[in-house]
Image (cartoon, rainbow, N blue to C red):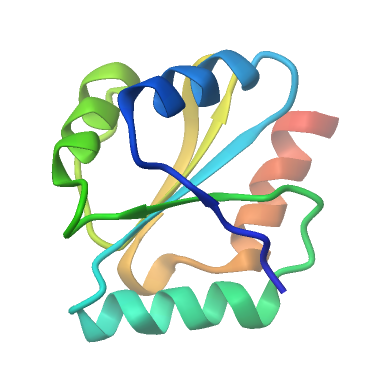
Length: 114
């Protein structure tokens, strides 16, 4: 089960980026009306065995935050999208049906364990 943390302000985004210097951070951008986004979210929740608690961005309520993510991390907006942040930079992102807990775990292993 995923312990989602809510991403609902630019201050939270600033904290995520700052915290990424101590521990990798994950953001999942989700559109609650998109069936593909719903499928991606269910796939993450079903396969999640990762020691991180990801941030959840509701794109319908906080669309402007996706633009802030795009500006600050140089990651083109997609929906749905998962982004791994390490040392203040987006080091991995996937969208649509390429989103999976196993792919994220592989990237974490690469960026943490080298």
